[in-house]
Image (tube, rainbow, N blue to C red; front, top):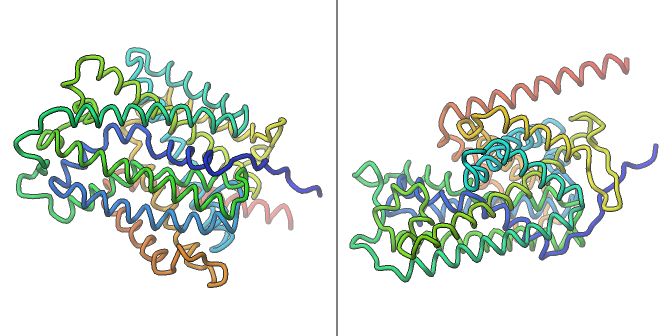
Length: 420
């Protein structure tokens, strides 16, 4: 039987880093600081440090594994190789289902920024257009991502400068909403909120089959993208706390509020930046879900036709089109924004499997930047953050995972009967 076709290695370090950074600077960077400040109050930076620590543990585990297993699929592949097919399936199924919902929510968020009165058709058009970009090849995806990322970075720099040019309030730090201080649970919950805002570095790992010199490029891209994103989030947190003060805890659009004194045009600039951030994150999301679907189809965990690759650019066209169809259905079905929280549980399962997989690497195969203790701490931290999620969100995603496991068990049993 001929070997399955592989995707071409076309991404360099700059391309891969841009895709990771574009994933982490999505709509969340324009909205996350208000809810986080409401939970953590004056300890907002502590929550950001905790979120960064968890993200660092997950990132180094992903980097170590991606350098050893540079294939499409990310933690789905790592879980299969290090922990067995069921662990891999759990990670892959959680990623594909949770991030498909995230794609729909991101598309709707973009549409509400640019055309709220026509949100659904505009969201559908965005999904279709970005799927077209992905179908043109991974280099086109990287190029568009870099353009959108440049717009987002320029807008964030403008917002920071405009904010610093305004007078500071009398009270410089936000207050937690409970009035008596944030408390440990508030700080931890805020860390969870901030973590999910910049957890996009996994997108680099899911594209591992398309990266040049993966053992060097992937770790550099993952760690570089995370360092850049954390520096940007920390800088914005400092500026927002200094200029909005107690108002930050009530801000639904804190970056917009930061430039409110710079004239009406400033608000439009921030709106354009938020729209570009949504598109950049959505583009990387669709690509990541498509590659994970491709990997699962290769192993028989999703329908085999999704593993088809074609074109001069070696594009997983069947998986990309399937993801597009599912996301469009979710957008048209509506109410995605009210239930999107369940994908956070899937993300934590995904990274828990990644850390557990990295924990099994023997010493000769373990890079210096991924010590065993950090892998163990990362797995524990993912489980700890899972307990901070709303119960309904956790139960919904747990139900999706159970349904997937049950479905796989039925399919495997049917295959055994046919083989017998």
